Image (cartoon, rainbow, N blue to C red; front, side):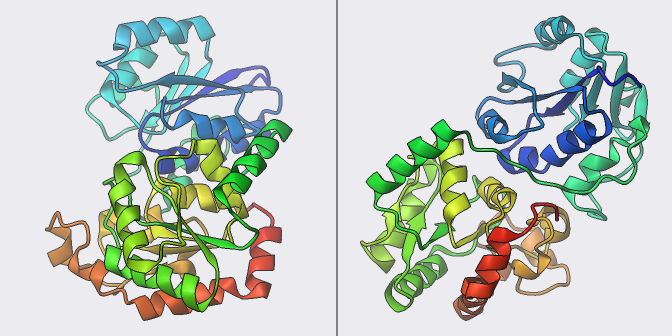
Length: 352
């Protein structure tokens, strides 16, 4: 294969999914150093790719049908003259656009009704959670002869990013030692109860004398306000105030990130920050597929075996999430806050 080819990685779902797709860009750059690697991503997640040293360009869009139909997208893609597209998040309208754009090599799953639009197909069911999502993404590189790529997370802050972030962190009152709590999930996962987050925040702030920073989207402001009201007015609430690059910067300098399965959790992992995460014992949500990569020991669950009762409920703070005790979270947080653990985490190679 020519080393001057142009690749498109398509990942148009959520932030965490996009972060877990970035190792594929690194693997492509390692195999084809002179190639150009682009992403097709949703507008609200695409900013995180501005930090990635192996991404040459980003095509931004929101939900197809509202902003751009398959025909218009195909016209746009044709203008870029892509040689290869990898459908990391397959959708029929996207597959049709790739086909209409005449992209020579179209790689995707072999298990969808529209899989005939891909001319290289990978037959692998993700729903059984046999691998981590980041590993599933790398498996789609196999038709390109890339069979043993490693999961690597990379980022690069430009000097202007660093300066702007330092000024804002000073304005927010952030010191050198703080812990980030992210109580929401963007309605995409099960959530540890707000009362538990409040107890943990009170312990970290009052007993450990640490700054506690609350993060979330603007829609999650009620969650962070609840925690601040029930824990301490000293907590710094940044919900709805951060761009993705600012969020990444805040997480990068945090001692520990605490949260549910969410995009910011994976951003924290991307930054090399120690994490403490809460997950339910449900196959579709398990940390083996969706957890912080390489950090399974840092995930708290109520039990390992499948919980069919929780699987069949729509309650965010389901029974199994409520059974994860505050005491267990404090113990795990203390473990992550040990000086040796913090030093190893922040100095570690970002290759998992």
